[in-house]
Length: 270
Image: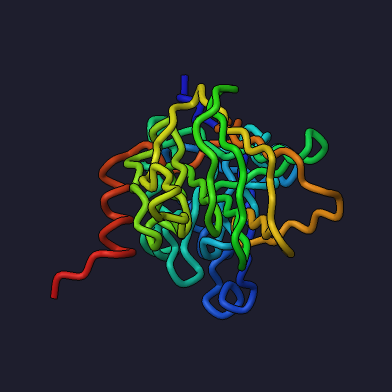
């Protein structure tokens, strides 16, 4: 009896239509999948198992933030600039043996932001809370008071987002999708009568951070992965915690892939 090949349903999203048209990226990817001998790939927009994202980090992040509840496997192919979340830097570099390898995928961790117990937002990279003038709030960890913060703001980052704004602000890089998130104080007040810990803090997945008694003079900016959140009501309460997405990202738990991404994106030795 002839062996029956496994079937994988897939879909393709291209967030750079001009480039996809110019280099026929979608057609080339479909051809590669069709020619692969170990698995039968069938395209399905309704129930894909694997979703290929052709774009840069911005498109990738926005897609994951919207679709994190889906039971999809995501493969990023860089069609943008940085491409930190991409496993491959173009169609010609993809390795289909890796793409069908279940061990290459891991559930993404996102930050859930709860505002006033009324609105929730999700971020794959980071949440920044800041004011152009002095702001203050009480910070509690798992309902235990931690400190009264005074300064410009706070930055929370996921493991995969720790190489974004968090890195620029000299926060810790969390290696290889560990189940934790970081909090970094932005320009805290520091003088003889007041000082905060003023050091990055890394929390495990069972911790939640609550901000209460929030005070600012004019505007408090809440930015979720680069998107400003307009909140008309008074902000009395912000809760931040880590959640695990149903969606899985290719190469997220593979330390060799992670090192490749770090080297490709940030490290220059010549």
